[in-house]
Image (tube, rainbow, N blue to C red):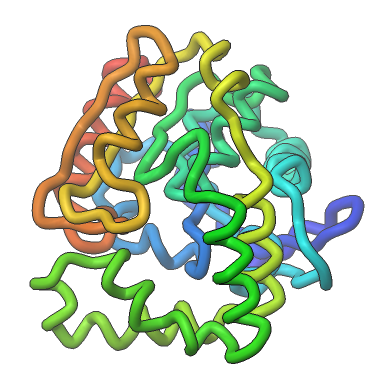
Amino acid sequence: MKIAELDDIRLHYRDEGDAEGAPIVFANSLGTDLRLWDEVVPRLPRGLRIVRYDMRGHGLSDCPPGSYTMDQLVGDAAALMDHLGLREALFVGLSIGGMIAQGLAAQRPDLVRAMVLSNTAAKIGTPDIWADRIEAVRAGGIEALADAVMERWFSAAFRETEALTAWRHMLVRQPAEGYAGCAAAIAGTDLMEQTSGLRLPTLGIAGSEDGSTPPDLVRETVELVPVSKFHLIRKAGHLPCVEQPAEYADVLTGFLEEVGHV
């Protein structure tokens, strides 16, 4: 296990593959940790330097008290990449991770040469929706939301498999304070203006049965960036990298090849 000691946060991360290879950075969704990408990473081409991390309040990273901001989460990603000496990475972000990708590309274009916006948007939900979710978590823990989250995360077919239990455990075992803190960051974020000003290779990925960021919402955000691409993964919900990892890896590999990152 590796911990990066940054200015105001300690982040858990993995740095795998070829130390001299082209970098690819993965950022997770709310309520998950870096294991989200376990089935995708082994399917990627050799020669890449693959970095994934637990955002603040999740996994084995620090969990500061209070609400977080998107600028903090973007700053964490930038600080980790600076710490590791990464430049011109392909940044893959899912859900809140995709919001981090957009903010990072706008604020630190030296760090991001291409991005994948997976199951995300420039604006997700409304402040009232997130306020209700934060209140529920603070009152009853993440367990109070777990069943509803599973319905948004996964297709009906996947919810009938034994694998669902492990993902539910991952969700409820995240720190409630961290979940609420990151939910507050989403609630306060609207990246429409920033993202519409971006000019870099961009791939959007959506799940056909995503109850959190439906395909049309993902497509609308991706189309803010000129010459972007969009791919729909069928029979998958909010986490297509879990339900359809082979297709996810194939699409990602194709994008890597297209932008000359492999």
